[in-house]
Image 1 (cartoon, rainbow, N blue to C red):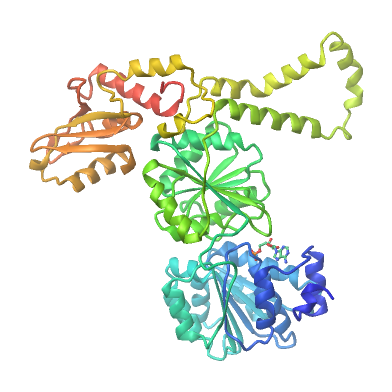
Image 2: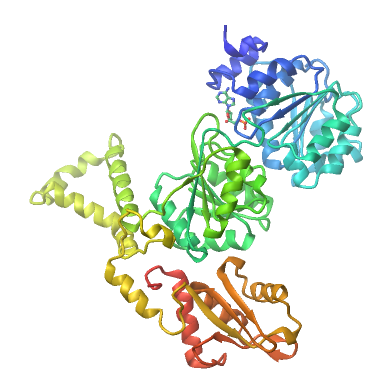
Length: 578
Ligand code: AMP
């Protein structure tokens, strides 16, 4: 007997999943389907995305629907338009062999009139986002009186997004429901409250451990100084030529900046952010899904509901503040039995976060080194050579050119041709990484990895850290603001960070006096900070900021300007930094 049939599914549905190539039910399907098929048991499924939960509730729903009754019998509520469309799509494929069952996706950002018209035709299953659903209920455009089954998918996400009242409203307006099924990756108290208020002794099933990460995900982290995050990211991408990944940032500005810099450097990347119209967002997602884009960069808010198969890497450009968000991010990879890597770029002061994450998901994180320039080039080289050997030459008119080619290359050896092909493809890589520095933090430098940097270069680095660069990697800045200006340390910190748009991690010691203060800052960020603050007005005073031991520089002073330009260059180009 087919394994899906054994769970109680009918022949048509078994045929559909067979067509889809599903051989065996996933764990959540195995545990949920027999219970849900009863139609009368409330159910809580703690499962991440990628565990096959859509089929876990979708297949039983399709079997329970009475196709002869053309009114909404099932309501699936989910957080985003993307997920709404994804679920509707999945239902369409699952019901391929079933009797005519009509589904309708209702979500914001699309014509409500069209959705109302479709609902009027009579549908059996409605898949909805909360906002649009409430709108339809208030317009009396949807009749929920005969809804028997309510599914809340990604309940924790919906609550995170502030849909608590909407969910209450929906559950209060489906009074004749016979069962409620709730799916969630995590079980915060708010989700627990919903089950307490609206569900009757639900059967609770957890796939894996509660709050645990997917077993197929390898959690890795690198430790680099904060100002090297971008360079480290670039190296990680270059070191993984087959990467199909999502990069998460904490802020919209970071997503925008990183995507802009990587695009300029020739990478296929786009940022997903709140400022995009729905149409632009769909276009970006379309390109990413069809793999015309290798990389997507997004904040957590913008990435909600993204559900793409085959993601090889999730990269945390910064670790999220909320540890549970980590589970959501990492869950984008390692789906449907495939393996994936979730790689976090950390600052040394974030090691404690890694330890908390390890505890939270009960998995060990692996510290990996940022690859050296040579390692990256080697990897790219062999990747290219593999592609070369796999190139399809069976179609096309290559034969026509062969005689001429053979003649032209008659005196050139195979080795030389290979070398020239490699040079064509790699000159930019080799040049870029020629003198690339070791990005791993100092505490790593002692280990056995061959460093690209020769001894002499570390000597010259020392020479340049002359009077104003301190050996600890920080520059000391002077500022003519102090406690007499009404600042405390915290408000002062806030002021300089807000003005410069820099992160707290770039700062070292802060020394405040009545009239002046001194700030230690990561060498690479010093230029940005001076540029943002020097010359600004504060309480009718011009603020002066400059390198502490380098003399007082006026904003228009030539020397100050060239210093600032140099400072900027130091941030962007790894070679200039040395
Ligand atoms: P979901 O968690 O519902 O988003 O499903 C994640 C992916 O797993 C989707 O691409 C499904 O098509 C796939 N999938 C679901 N169930 C199975 C199964 N039993 N065997 C193989 N793939 C599956």
